[in-house]
Length: 68
Figure 1 (cartoon, rainbow, N blue to C red):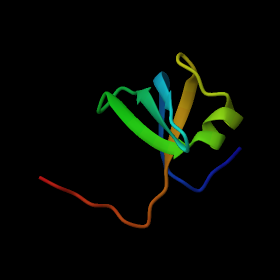
Figure 2: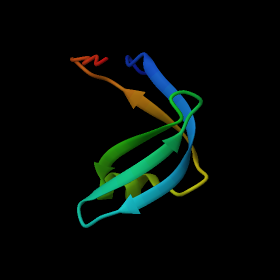
Figure 3: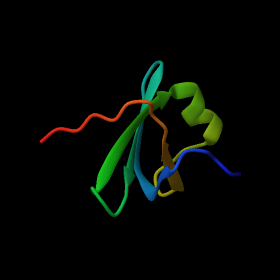
Figure 4: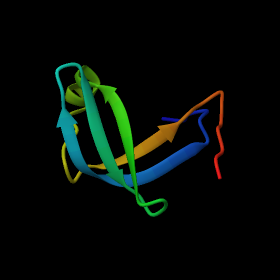
């Protein structure tokens, strides 16, 4: 599958925390180390996400906020 999003980070899932509606998915990547994606519980279940899965975090945004 080709995507228009250029920000793609390959990593491995270290934790999936399913809530009533949302799921927090922790993905270990080279830099910055770990990112957390908050997705719907339905999407997490549909993808069958589990610890140890190799995944790609795809970041598509119309805004970039920089802090220092």
